[in-house]
Amino acid sequence: MSGARRLLLTGGIVLALWGMSYGLWYAVFAEHQALEEIGSSLARGFSGAAARNIALAEASLRQYQQAKYVYDRQVDVHGHWIGLAMVLVVAGIGLDRLAFSERIKMLLSVTALLGSFLFPLGVLLQTLNRGNGPRAVAILGSALIIAALGTFALGFARKPAA
Amino acid sequence: MSSSQGAMPLESDTVFVQSQTFAPLSARRLLLLGGMGLILVGMIFGDIFAVFVLHQNAARVGASLAAASHAALGGDSAAVVKNFQNVGSFLENRGTKVDTHVHIIAFGYVALMLALLVPWMTLSATTKKRLAWLLLCGAGLLPLCVFLIHYVGLAYSPLQAIGWASIFADLGGLLVIVALAGFLYGLVKRFLSAERAPVEDELLAGSSATGRSLLAGGSFLVLLGFLHGTYYAAVDLYRHEALDYAILSQISVGAAGENTTAVESALAAYGRLQGDKAVNIAAHAHIIEFGLLAMLLAYFQPYVNLRAAWKQRWAVVLLLGSVLLPVCVLLELNYGLVAGGLADIAGLLVIVAMLAMWIGILRYTGKLDAGGAT
Image (tube, rainbow over all chains, first blue to last red; front, side, top):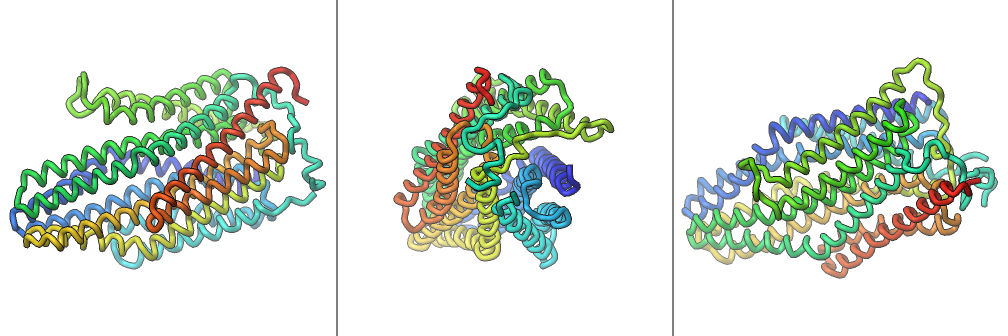
């Protein structure tokens, strides 16, 4: 098995396990509380409106907004880490069909693996810091993935030499 | 046919011998046929859900939210809470059906991936077969029980918050985890072994025109899905999040100020926003999943015992449906039910193409078992 293929297969499986472990931790320790906060703050906001208490309604809806911002990203991170890991494994299985040199295949594998780890990480970091740093990490990660996926697609489409 | 294809024993209706890895009731055969069966069932369920449940349920959620807003407008806090409980119930109904659809298909993908990796596992054929059955049982049990959660509720449950359906769904998940751990053990054992012999799997060595179309087409679909997701994150995500808060705020301020017009206009805007978000997320998820499916099916083309021309046609139909469905889902906002209907037809194209490939593989197993393989 070539180094590039081993990297994609091993990296993909490790990333999937990492994503699943994160999901397990999230489901056990965080998700229920997050959903509870989203639902209760929204209901409190409307109850505040019914009681003509605009300050309570606004504060509750702000709480809802914050909780949902974090929840959406945490769920997305879980799905993207595992989804990208599956793409890595599937691409890795067929890496020998790519009509590229071993060096390019290795470069491609490193790019895909790095991007697949960094993109969801950047999204996750946005729940801790809303500045440009986490966004830059997510953008860099997605750029790496797009570059790798585009090259994979072109490589798979090319007819192998007879 | 090109010279390279002509040289390959895997092209067209040629059947080649892989009696060891694809024997009757072997792990690979179970995982391949079972995995494709799971994906087919999940897709058919998804199509039925989209036609008969999705829109009706969304309308009920919208109606309950509107009722909660009107209750707030009328100063009735108790009715607000009651209507939010209704929203919760409708969302649970929808959520369990989406989870059923998603899990059954995801388990199918896992089964297909494992079918490819089976030769790399240092386990006995019997152990692999048992693990495959365990995975398929869990993969069937979990989605079925998730589907039943909404209907069974807490009836006869020994626990206060978790019903029997949830308990059996968890049991299904546990079976899948145990099976996956077993397969992973086999893989790790092989990778750690100093005396491992190289694996020669003709499935992976083959490079037929159909396999190449599916592999390249699948990669392009995944790329397209990723580009769409990037565009959505850059252009719409933050705007949608800001709008979500702004509209809800408009509803509550309007209700507190007893401004019916403001509440009604905000409710209409909220419905449009939820629709916009839903179609973007659905299109993004579906195009990537179909891409992954096409890539996985590419590897199994040597087992599809159909004429080369028909294999190519079904690959094109699968890719066509895979592009059309997400595009039509995106167009649903502007073209409503027409686009929705076309999306359902596109889903049907993917199902029919997959079914054709599944039948082709069944034909191959029949030929292999009858000793007709050449």
